[in-house]
Length: 438
Image 1: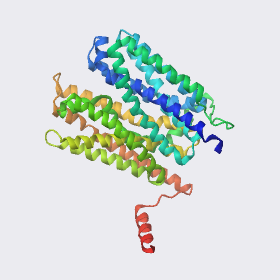
Image 2 (image 1 turned 180 degrees about the vertical axis):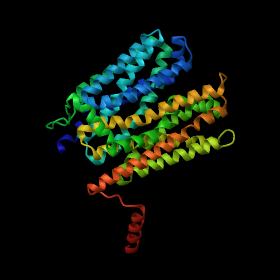
Image 3 (image 1 turned 135 degrees about the vertical axis):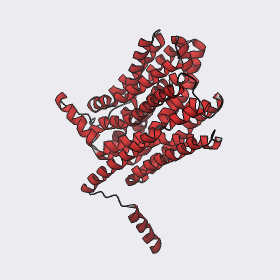
């Protein structure tokens, strides 16, 4: 990459991408804050409305690989523009729908459109910025999800409550068209004078290309890091966190909402720190991810094993480690970025992104089935929710095994290419010698 791509234009391209991502997350989380209003509009229960979220997350995960292939073929500008228009169309359809089938169709559109945005930004970063900046920029990009979540609370919900379901959603959807226009006007797939890194595969070769990217240990390690760092946070944010805090821990609605807000804010601060550590210690990225995962396991174990209600300090600590788990997923994107050609990053990043969303969706469904079974049609108790959250254990174990196995394969490949990751014993011995020389 030449230096012609650096400068103000790069920051404009990235800034417009951040706007698009915040808008996408605002629409993604809108039902999380307006679930009661949605239930009232459609004349159903919040439990049925929760299936909208599960469907949307499942579509988001399933769409990642096709979207990644489309990014590799057509570039970020076209795909992100189309994604935002799908989001706008999905929200408009949800606003106008009076029955559940149309509402489900609306969330499918939104899920597909949402899948286009974050991966599209990741595809742009290596073309516009120096490699040393990318880990931090990736984390800051993910940080903007917090702004989207806050916008759903301070913008979407008040509009629905004051102007009604239909008009409130239509206004938000209409305003979001400006983000699509900004992408058309300001985003370019490559700096001036450089060719876009797109590739046109014959249709018969696409399955083989997907298989090749999927088999690469860098993609697999990225997937397992994303899965293990993020599934717990997704299940907490999108479905079972609020019931656990209110019913399981006896918090008020205001206290639980405060912890959710704190989670978003803490994630914003944790992202740049994780990004800086990833950039500073590129050979220890998987170790950093494992520290995040072990912290999640340790704090969850402390909360779930605590007799009775956990103390407030421990719940705050839980929210802190969950907030770090979000940026922890971003470490996963750094493995394919440094190991695969840029023409395959769209597909590879798509596979990585499915990690936490697949894990989170499966955990949400598993917890829901378990709670319905153990409660037998009655209201959930704190003990029911405690046991349901304990179902995370096999997810963590499978994820850690996936990280360790794929890391071993990637390090063997790196050794064949002349890059050797020193053992911790060698690192400590080197530090001891330096101190002796000093």
